[in-house]
Length: 175
Image (cartoon, rainbow, N blue to C red; front, side, top):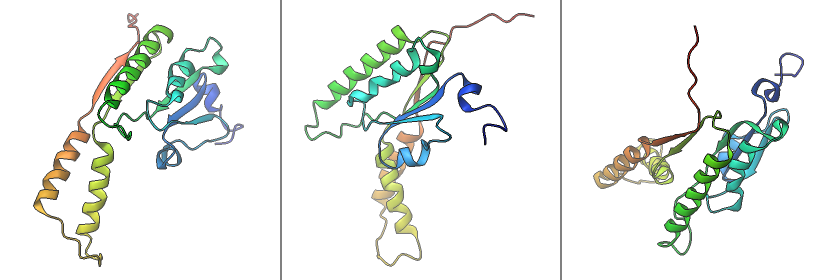
């Protein structure tokens, strides 16, 4: 909407919207800028130094520098070439971020962290499954019962997430 029709996002939400995530289709799909009210930062995994922008955007003393809404997609998927040892580094980085959020962000700011397992695998298998089941497909690709079981397992792992709330002090109701 135009700024003369209503207040801007910044005015309505007491700060700009900040989106931090991978520079693949996530940014273009979910984090498009609008009227200069959004800040989009590319960060392909939690191991990227840009991931620590999350507590910084939420803890700024200046309200003009504090995010009214922060949406981050920080991948912890052990994508590195080294493989096995990377999980410890990702867990350590996640611990650092949670500590920074607890220590630096005012407690009245609600924060929810969602953890979704195997999203990339479930997405890839879903695309393969759709192609195999498409009657217009000329590839001749057959979808096996083993693949169906793997897809079902991945979808169920991905479907059920964990959510952790940080902050958000409770205030008493007044009549």
